[in-house]
Structure formats: structure tokens, C-alpha cells
Amino acid sequence: MKKISVLAASLLIVACSPASEPEPSTSPQMEVDPYSFNENYRDYLATLSSDEFEGRAPASKGEELTVEFVSDKFRSWGLKPFNEETGSYRQEVPLVKMTPYSVSEMTFSDSDLSAFSYKQDMMAWSPRVQEEVSLDGSEMVFAGYGIVAPEFGWNDYEGLDVAGKTVVVLVNDPGYDTGDPEVFNGKAMTYYGRWTYKFEEASRQGAAGIIVIHETGPAGYGWGVIAGGSPVRFDLARENKNMDRTEIEGWITQEAADKLFARVGSSYTEMREQAQQPDFQPVALNTAMSITVQSDFEYLNSPNLIGYIEGSKAPEEHVIYMAHWDHLGMNPISSDDQIYNGAQDNASGTAGVLALAEFYASQPQPERSVVFVLVTAEERGLLGSNWYANNPMLPLSQAVAGINMDVLNVYGPMQDMVVVGHGNSELEEYLGKYVEQQGRYVAPEPTPEAGSFYRSDHFNLAKRGVPMLYAKGGNDHVEFGVEYGKEKRAEYVQVAYHKPADEYDPEWDLRGVQQDLWLYYWIGNELANSDSWPNWYAGNEFRATRDATADQRQ
Ligand SMILES: [Zn+2]
Image 1 (cartoon, protein in one colour):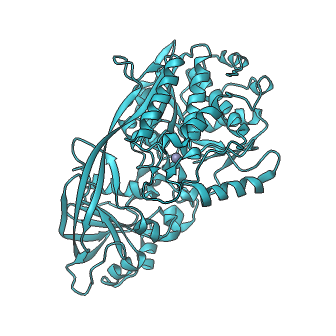
Image 2: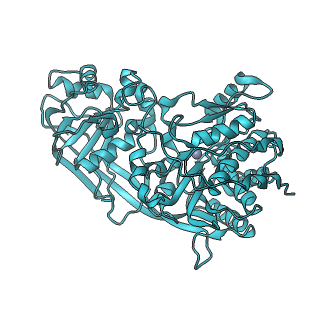
Image 3: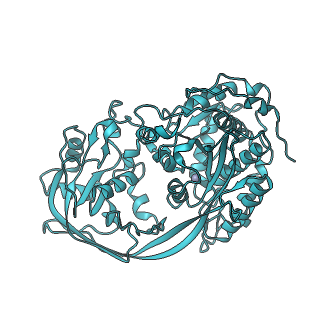
């Protein structure tokens, strides 16, 4: 049975305000049951994470069932389809599966430098969709952190011509390494600290290759995670076959870096210190590197699922709710449980988007559109959201804000609402207002140095300037306190995260999700019935991109 409160409709009376501050509070929490936003949530969660759905891998039977389930729901609630002509909610995302079957040693022109062997000293692959890729005597240069960040007054590539060369760079950013809160964001990771950024920047600079030096602390994981993982990679199948990317990407160990730097009379520690100085100059490593990678390719398709409610007044302007529907699928050679159900990751978020869509559909039409985007292939590298960011249903300059849901809280009502990437945008003020009305408090994420903000789908829209909120119930359990919450979370990471044990448990206390769904709804609904344009805070790395389209928002 569906139980939806009509009292939330009282929230719809929101005056137009030119500023981006949230409207004064109307105390919605006094009028609704905070623990029952949409009672169908549990059904959606249980269905999506059932064994029948086989762990929802892209291009699998589980995908078919997920597409059917979501499309049927969207249709029954009268959501408009992504494809007006065919009535389909599918946005096809072309993917390519890349399997390197042979990676040579990394050899050097400097005869005193012995070759680096695959997995032991280095990991390498090609981002290009090309059977064989070789670097043959590519000169190596140390380019510090490999960062160009005008808002932080930083440019490691200044005056450096990298054409044909391979750049060697440090992991993370200078703020992390110095611990100085005045440098970048101090210990909290910025987008510039992510290795994905470093690969992208090296491509923009026109380098032939890029190698990141691994160090466990600033990387956030050990060498084993890099060398021990599957070499199979997925990417969007682009027309240019990624020919605009460097030929080779990879990692080397700290020990391997020491050997490289010793050839120019230095060491990893010394170079790292040098790179932290604002007057750092790139260092030629006086050796040329050669390597060959051979790969197989397989093309597949998997859809994003998109339904929306059209705004009555400004239909192009829109609020986005987002979650990834995909998970890891099955491991058919396991003798144990073969199904990676992905109940928390991310049937919980997918069910959240469904619960919100259903609720919105039961309410008066909003002034701006509300778009529900369930993306594919997050687990393959945020690919569905990447595709959406490049092929949005409505122009992203007209996206007011987005709310992402990934691994929602299934451990009961929490006092705290944790904002991942805390201190980023004005959306936190909207959240703060409603969190307070629930008698709860906003908490920054406990480990900002892990860079979690850059590791879920909202990030692809953030990169395009769209203010994105990624927040969820934390650890401070209403009845059992902080230790209980922490214990539950640690247990999940240990036992279930990305394992077959991430299964639905009928004992789960879903009152916490219900609380959070109210918040997601109140924020989105306020924005969908206003003419406000919340922005990133000044100094944030996405602010300039957003401001570049400001004249399109009047
Ligand atoms: Zn996830």
C-alpha cells in the first residue's frame, strides 16, 4: 500500500527570490511522519537486490529486469520519457571493454637503469582503442603533481613542452602533502588530487605517456589494489577511439621512482619536497622509456534510465535526482555465492530515486522540471553519468542542482547527515535548514582525504559546473549512539562492500532512509518551485565552469 503525505504540498507555496539563499523555514517536519516518506521503498530495494536480478551488471539479464522494472514504474506514475518519439526511458550508452593481453616491460635508454616489470614495479595500459600501442624512446620528465589549477595559483606544466614525452607525477595534491590548510584544501582531497584528473591533464597537455608514482598514504590504498585488480577496463565507446588521450597511462611504485630519480642524483623524498614549492620547475630525467601494450576490445550497450516531470513555468530549468542502477553482476566461477547483489550499493539509491519519482508524481506540478536519472556503469568508472554529462536531456546550464544517492543508510534513524565534499556549495545551506527542522545536524565527512566526492556519479555533473549534493545519514544513531553506527559502517566495508554479502536484509531499519528522502525531497522541491540558482562557493574548483554559463541563467 502506498502511503503518501499530502501535507508536503503546503511546501509548494514558495515566493520567487532572486538570491540563492533558501527560503525561511516553514517547519515541514511538524506536519509529516519523518519515518514514512514512501512505504514502497522497501519493496523497490528488495526487488532490485534480489537474486533474480543477478547483481545488475550492464548488458546482462539483470539489466533487462532492471530496465523493465524501472520503466514500468516510471510509466505507471506518468513520468515523461527521455525519448519522446519512442516513449522509451532508455538513453543508450555505448561502452567498450578493453582487455590488455600483453604488456611488455618498461625499458630505459639509460643502460644503468634496469627494466621495470609489469605488476611488480609498474602497471601500464593504453586508454586508446587501438590493438597495439607502443612508446619507443619517449623522454621522461618529472612534472611535480601534474596539476594546472588557476584558482589555487598552481601550474606544474608551466613552460613545459611535453609533446612525445612521458610525464612522471606525484599522487594527490600539494595540500595533502604539506598539510597546510592554505595550500589547495589542506588534507581534504581536491579534484586535482585524483589520478583520473592527472591522466586527463596530461592528455590536454599533449603528452605521449603519463605515469603516477604510487604511495600508500596519499593514494589511499596499497600497491596491491593497483597491481592485483583485474586489468580489464571499460570506457565509453567514443568516435575518436580516445586518440586524444595519451598513448600510455600507468603507475610505478615508490621504489621504482627512487631508481629513476637516482639517475639524476635525487630521490623520491627529495623530488616530492621540491614539487611542493610554489617555484617548482619540471625536471628532465635524462632517460627515454619504451613499452608496448596489446589489447582486445569488445563493444556493448547499456542504458541510462531517464524519466521526468515537466515544469509548468520554466520547463528547461530542472532539478536532477541521480543514482547508479548497475552493480558488479555475477562471478560464475565462484563455488560460493556467485551473485553480487549490491543491495546497499546501489539498489538503495535506485530505490530512493524511484520513491522520490513516485512521490513527486503524486504532488502538484512543479514550476521547473524534475529529472530522474538512473545511470549505468558507475562501477566501471562512472561511465553512464559521464555519458549523460556529455549528452544531457536538457542543457546543463539550465540544471539548477542535482542530488546523488549512492549507498543510503539502512541502519536506522541517525542524528547526523554527512555531507561528502563538505564546504563545496550553497546547496548545503538548503540541506542545513531542513536538517535542523528534523532536529538533526550536518556533519562533514570523516575522511575527506579519501576523495569520496570524486568517486560517485554526481562528480561528472560537478565537473560540468552543476552544483551537486552528495549527503546521507551518518553514524550517530538516534537510539544506540555513534559507536553503533560506526561499527555497522565498518562491518559493511569489511564484509559486504563490493562482495556477494552486500545483500538485502529484511531486518534492516529503513527509517533512516525515509528521513533522508524527506530531505532530498524538500530541497529539490524548494528549488523546483523557485527561481534561485545556488552556486559553488567561491574558491571551489567547479565554480569557474559554472560561472562561464551565468549569462544563460537570467
Ligand atoms: Zn555505488
